Length: 169
Image (tube, rainbow, N blue to C red):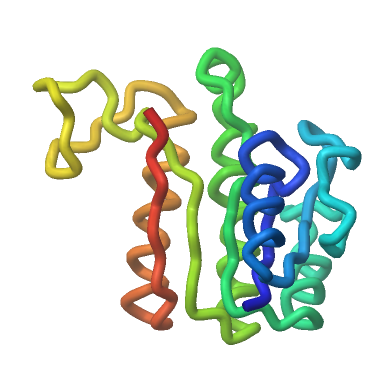
């Protein structure tokens, strides 16, 4: 399977890329290298340097590579910074992500893995936590990830884009 990985030069993304390649998948990495490192990208993967804010670049990258799945790891992810600069988080984690969703739909992609966060839950009401607990983020980072999860639900409903959200603890 051909997999398109955003944020594939970051820590989690680069490990995922390596595992996908070892399993025999074709991988295209799309990263702006603002947080990640080119040296972290496995040389067996195709690498495209680009930013999700550039709608035409992401549409062309997905369209020309025709992946069967997208794994989306690219994001700003610092809770403290999100409190000081919330617009950066909503712009990058939500608005720029919409460009990727549009590219997925236009490119006929039907599988989407989203790197979310446990910060979508906020302060847990009970322990241990379960998926059934209410999501009440307490910072812009968690809120931006929750908004994107909600967008994914709509894209699944309207466009058949099946997704899974990974919430790291």
